[in-house]
Image (cartoon, rainbow, N blue to C red; front, side, top):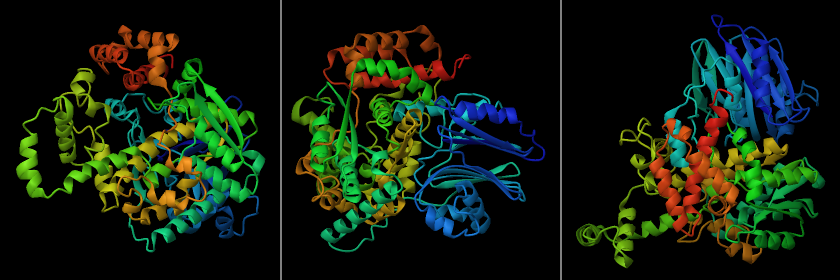
Length: 623
């Protein structure tokens, strides 16, 4: 489902129904989607839904459009007892807004994108849920604001010019996605997770109503905290599944600790076998089906498996490029979509995903890497500064063998965060001068390529270094990357996805856990594993993290169709007329890919390929 709308001041051009029709049509990613629109001269609202469910409501006082999946409906409906039990959520939100103003958002448990127009004050409220699962973006001027779940809805209104934001494209090349609040278009911004916007008389103000914080104030023994964590995880899975029967429920199952925990807890709660779904590949380096099968057998789930090859990626690529309003290089959207399509074919209405577990409980490999670098700081400063650093500085960082590795380790350990943490970013690993076209910003060292990540790092409501890094990942890895990957694929497949680990009481509890219990020494997600030690098989608890990756880097190198398409697109002279990146760099990566046995260089090419394919689909005159 998607929401959209236009609000104008009395001096602005009145809202036209045709504009709303264009916006809702642009937001429909599935054939047969239902649309509803309502407009007055000063406000127009629209809803697009893949089902017949429409949540648009209007009275003499307020008009509301929402895309919401709320798990505490009984509690919030109890506050508006005057409404009938079958009143729409939009109606309920209208009454709560009249009672509490924007503070009503704090009462909602679930995910939502909400637009409310107050006729008396001529004020628009836009709000998104705590993690931004249901996104909103907007374009505001002195007399008009246009908003939608996705940028294509705004652009379809005809009120906002489609002008590229070069800064956003450089951020894309650095992070593989365009991070909020940027969008790919100069005049469109994304509403940050856990915030709302008030637009009145042509002026927009944003405010945060919820933030991920890290007080680390949980008290008790490790065993006691592990017990509390499992209880809260169980409650979160229950909240995400209690309104759906077993036959309509499914779970992603990669074989990792997060997805396996969701399957295990759901099985306990339903006291029946549940449906789990996995995608595998012939390339063993990327294939986790053996672990998914172990988990499925352990929990007795009805396990559905699919396998993908390069032909599947090639065939679906045009749909994926069309799906995203801005360049998006997370290739795992492809197996995610196929998994969701498989779920729909088997009658699954709601899928539960394990996203968020890594970022909340310390599950990413780079957290352990940071701990390794921190070991150097435990050496007394007098030894580091007066003995080790001077000696190491005489060794070239390109020196072979142990000496060169030690020099690189010391240099990296001495690099402050977040620069050290983000050294994997493309324009940190390679120089901007090598990659960027001559007219692109940041090319000549002017400006901060890590500005958005740096802002998150310094704004983190945390005193501990590890929690600051977790906060960056909550905002960028999760909010800008993984959630759009899953939710947009779910829109295309026509399946609702819920994220139990992002239930905000569980997230808040994770912030209360001391960071030393998230990553203990070099052991990742320590407390999480303690909590699930009697739930998960030992083989799952001890397995090396794999992630839900796609062997796209290998396919671009070895599959004839993928290789030919990549070469044709990236070596096309039209590609370089745009000036985003340099042919010399692309040729260097092609050459390195052919000499390297890893998928690394192929994945770099994928980043540039997706940018060019996106431009051809969304920026050419015919788009």
